[in-house]
Image 1 (cartoon, rainbow, N blue to C red):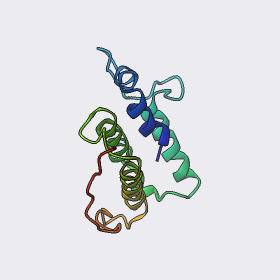
Image 2 (cartoon, one colour; image 1 turned 90 degrees about the horizontal axis):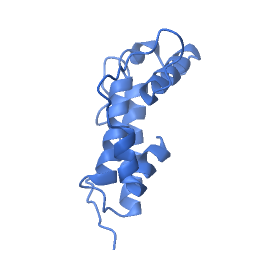
Image 3 (tube, rainbow, N blue to C red; image 1 turned 180 degrees about the vertical axis):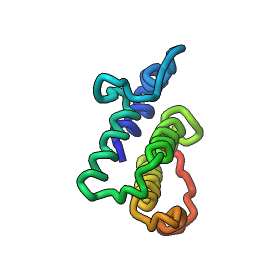
Length: 130
């Protein structure tokens, strides 16, 4: 998981919010004249490279960028300025690990299965920083 994406909202929440504010006319489609420089475009390119390299099953590729993006970005927002902003480092690391396992499971489970629930099940009790 992108550790910078999760570190940045916690340490610089205002900058994080500004970076992800949407301008009035923002397209999430790749430009016709080259690679998409936006973070979602970069994620799409990496996923396509994984398929081309044979690391990611092509059957997992179609649209998988959106659940991955939602998981990483959602956790970043929750930790950055949401209800998890005051959790301690150990809890944050546990959440990052669970999110990474969730994404990995979605990428590697049989195509007929969502992979959800295949990671270790345990109740997470967020601890507040002292």
